[in-house]
Every structure is written in C-alpha cells, then in structure tokens.
Amino acid sequence: MDTQVISTICSNILPQIHLQVHKLTVEEHSMKQMLYAANYPQLYSLSLVNFHEITLHRYLTDDLILRDLLTKQITHLNIDIIKPVELCSEIVSNMFALILSLCKKLIALNFCDMFPTRQFQSLIFHVILEIFISSTLMKLKINVVSLIDCLYILDGPFVCLSTLIINIGQIFHICLRIDPTVIGRLNSTYIDGIQLYDQFLIYMTQLKKFTFNIKSEVYDMNVEVELQSNEDIQRSFIGRGYQKVASYVNTNVCSRYSECHIYSLPYDFEFYVYPQNSFQRGMFHKVRKLKMSDGIPFEHKLFKFIAQEFPFFKFLYICNDNRQDDKQDSSTLITFPYLTFLDLEKAHVDYAELFLLEKNMHLPCLVVKTKTERSTVISVLQWTLLRHVTQSLDQINDEDTKKNILWKEMYWLNQYWAQPVPKSSIAPKYSQRLFITKSLNTRRDLYEYLWDEEARRERLRFRMKKRKEKFAAT
Image (tube, rainbow, N blue to C red; front, top):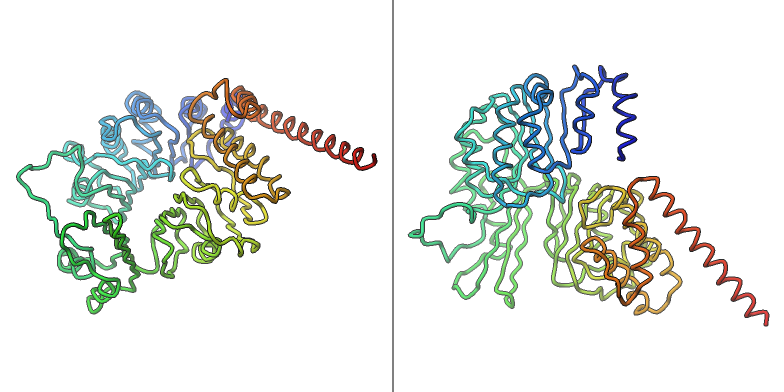
C-alpha cells in the first residue's frame, strides 16, 4: 500500500470509524500513522505484520500509545517478524518476554507463526524464568528452537493455557550447551504406539484427547538396528486407547536414511508434509499448507488425488527436480479452488508447465507465485511476467523448445529477485525488461506498465499476423 493511500485512510476514514474498529492489522511503515490517527476504544485484536525485529522492539519499548493498548485493551495479538539475522535472536526472545509482561488481558497470542514463509524459531526458555507471566493467556501459537523451550512452557507458568500449538525444531539445539559426557543412543528406532504410551501418555492422567503428528528419521544405516515395518507400527497402537492412526514407513538403503510418519485421524493440523508418492487416505479438510518432496517424479494423477484429499489448502511447496514420466493423463483439468501461494523454486520445470498452463490447472485464487517475501505488487508483477510467457506455450508443439522458454524466463526472474541483472547476458531482451520493472514503486506504475506491455505484445501479434497474410497472398 503506497504512502498516499495510507495518508488518506488515516486522515479521512479512521477518524470516522474509529469507534467501530474491533480488529486492526498494521505494517511497519504505517504503524505510527495508524496508531496516532484516532483512539480505538473497542479494539481488542491487533496484528503487527512485516516488522523488522529491531523496529518492533523499539515500538514495544518506547511507544506509549502501543504500550497503553497492549496493557489495557488487547486480548488477541498476532506478531509477524521478517526473518532475523541470527537464528537464536536475543532481541526476538526479549520481545516475547516484553509482550507477556505488557499484556495484562491477553487471551490469545500468535508469535511469529502467521505466514508459512516466515516460520523461524524462537529460543525462549531462559526468558520465561525471568519474567512475571500473565495468567490470562489461554491460547499460544509459536515455533520454538528445541524441546527445552516446549518443556518450560508446559512447566506451569501459563496456568490458564488450554490450547498450545507449537512447532519444535529439534530435541537439542546448537545454541544450548550439551554435556559432553552424555553418550547419544545409536540404536534408536521409530516412535510408535508403545513408546508413546509407555514413555509419555501413561504419565498424563488428566489428558482427555491426544492429537499428534510425528515423523521419525533414522540416519546412518551402518548401525545394526532392526526397524519396524508399517504393519508393526499399526499393531503398536492396538489396545491402548488410541483413536484411528495412519502411518507409513519409507526406507532408502542407498542414502542410508529411513523415516516413519504417524498421525492421528482425522488430521487436525494446518500443515502437512506430503511424504512420498505412497500415501494413505485420510481426512485432511483442515490442511492449509502442503509441502511435497520426493526423489521420484510427481505425476499428473497424483495431483488429481491431492485435489480430492486436500480440498481447502492454500499454500503449496514442491521440492522435486525430477522430470515427469507420464503425461498421458494431463488432458484432465485439475482444480485447486483455494490455492493462493505456489512455490516452485526447487521444482523441475515440468511442474511449472503443469501449474502455469491453463489447460492443465484451474487456479482461480492464485495470486503469488514467488519465493520472495516482497510486497504484493512485486509478487503480482513476477507472476504476470511469467504468465505472459506461459500463455503462448499452448501453440508450441516441440517439448524441448517449450521447456527452454520456461527455463529462460524462470532463470531471469530468479536472477532479478536475487541480484541486479548483469549487463551482458544470453538473453538481453529479458534483462532490459526486468531493469524497467525496478522503477515500479506504486500500484499505479504496475498497472500502467502491464497495460503498456500487453499493448506492445498485442501490436506485435497483429504485425506478425499481417506479415503471414501478406506472405500467403504472394
């Protein structure tokens, strides 16, 4: 949103509706204008998005209006921080503690887990010990570095906490000091129903419902360990009070790596890492983020299956650099009605062709096709430039020519977002066009550029048509 639009909203709109504002979303560049535009006596939900950690920490420390809102009014708070430079950022940890100290009426907190592209982990266990935590917090959503952080959250300070949605990076972390005399287990097996019950559930006597999604990974198959089969995993859940459980086991002897994935059904999480081409049916209506990764190609029929099993997902990440083998079924149109974000950064060009050609996919809500975390204008521009190319590919019969065009366009897009386009290149016309886009600062500039670009292309198509007609007549 450009500066002029923000000024108009703050000066003309907010003063008229400020008594009816219950929820407010504020970005870093508009923070001061929005907060100082009016009083918000009915405001209870605040979302602070696209903030750098230092800037947000300064607001939380020095801005009296923000501090007053957090202390007296805000019950629901969402925090989104642009990825910090350091993994174990001390500023982010202190910010978490500061929020808990300030917010006397806080009921629900989402700390840095609003968007799938920004799910960095926080090291928070040490700050929990040093602060007085409000007892009003009932729901917490957060990503943490290690299991240690999770244990400190569960160990009593949040006395009213009834809902905890937490993503744990790993058991231990490099930021923590580990006793060098402790010898790690080299004969670990997959986590199954027996281990969960004997080492975890049996001690939680007040637990009414246990919903889980657990992936076990075993590396270095030189160690002589007899790993369970999928049938063994399923049998381990029988007779211990579990609900329906899905599981799969995948062993890759060549890479000395094996994995086991177990989860309760119906699946109750927003994020799902699609394991392999082998897949058990489940109930995945709550999934909104899907990541697909495998060492063998994802074929067209698999995406048809996903469209049925994951009807409401919005974010899709594909990590597969293997070309598709079977395209015979690609004539069937696949629809993903809610897909809004598609990441093909680590995907073979076949998947770009599959998703970008309208004869293959119907994606009515797709807006962003980018690996960056830039503004919506930039993302839409990147998508539009790529789509201009793919719209013409239906008329090209040669598969190698089609792929070369896609590769060249995707190469220049990636080069543009990563660094300045070089002066000399194998495709100077792409370089020239992408240099032009660097001057686009507003939405109006974007629309005017795209209008001119499309008009230029239309004139070119018209001239080519006339030349063909003239040549045919002679």
